[in-house]
Length: 583
Image (cartoon, rainbow, N blue to C red; front, side, top):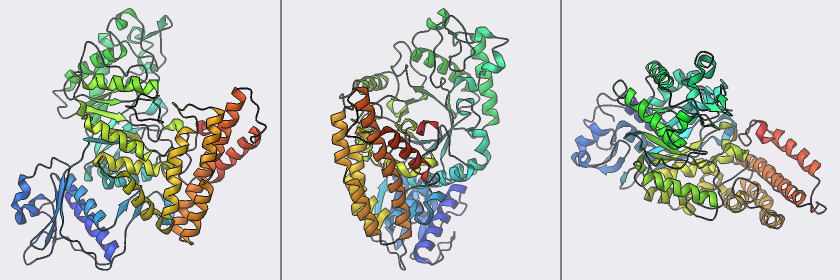
């Protein structure tokens, strides 16, 4: 039963509950607004729940918190808002054994991205669940969008709600390459996002979206930055933020864009990727890159406030400008993504074992101590980084560790990349990230064991051992930023990884021909072959760099030929994202 006049989101929540209960039990569940004569109904939504349990209205749930409880024979499922009620529905289904491991991409085949148990008579005991999200912002970025389509974006959005991720971010036009553009997908995606209560963030890199060099440079060269002693039309060079006419035109173009895109909840106004900041005297006089960015954002925010009162603006701390400004603060309500692009993943960001991590963490502390509200800061987590070239950098314990620390610091949330093209490689990281953003106090070891068992069945114990081996070895052995490789250490890592093949063989044997599990194991096989090859290539490179030769290692030519064979073996299995940087 639902409220008498359900919203789109509440109606969707009720239909999702009925749809999955039918899949679980084989019994069709009717959706009604009439409680009369019912003694054992599933009540969905604030209004109908308050009729049975008036104490519900006194709970401090916020927009996204929810309650699942038994009262007078009924099961009450409701949130602080209709979005919270949708989350409650999925949480209730999890109590019945459902799991939302990944989007239902076609490449998962019989495995699908989720688990729905088959129970002839599903039963719930005495429930009294109250949950609220630990982090305010739980974002998924489309970013470069190399493998996204309208269909798989809808599948991602469907998973996001089930995983309780609440912001989708799409570039206006990533790097002006015209392949990842919000306008390409917006009409198809807005209804899917809105009925799930997912916020829409649009923008990405950079200022040229609103002040394109190709349109303005010829007539207004003084609007643009100075690089190597002259005004530059290179889109990576930041425009002259000291030029009032340039800023005024930028603001006017932002206003025009927003009027044509009223769906936007958060607008990114970021410098270009790889930004070169103008060294013209009037620009340099404004201060550091961080200070110039804050000054510009404050001007934009002030200009937009009257006409777009609900809009949030976001900037980034990134590349050469992660340090906080000394003289200025962002206006209240402006958001920030903190982007430690060159960090080490051998240690948590807050651990000082790697100098760049120490620098980043000091910068982060500078931002939250007196510059801006930490709840307005999102950590751009890089857990599925393009620079990892689809290698299985699985770091569930590190993700959990950092989430706990950032939560204690009052940080607002996490953001991460997503690509369907290598989602299977990073499935575990995406899954754990979503869980810890809701509850960083979960038992990660127990969660991993549950994941392996529910996802891989009888093959679960061998897969769990394999995944732990990957976590303990691979981030230290494939040359990602912050790793300290030597030939001796690399040989040790290769030796430690040696049991991986046997663990996968055991998993195949335990799967006993289960087609869904075999499909998942084939993806692990593909990823294993790729990373094992990469580890040996790293060893050859280390030996060559020290002129030690490679008499005890494989031929570089043979390794490279094998690498191309592995990369091209199954281009559509969701393991390796195709692109020049993979090669």
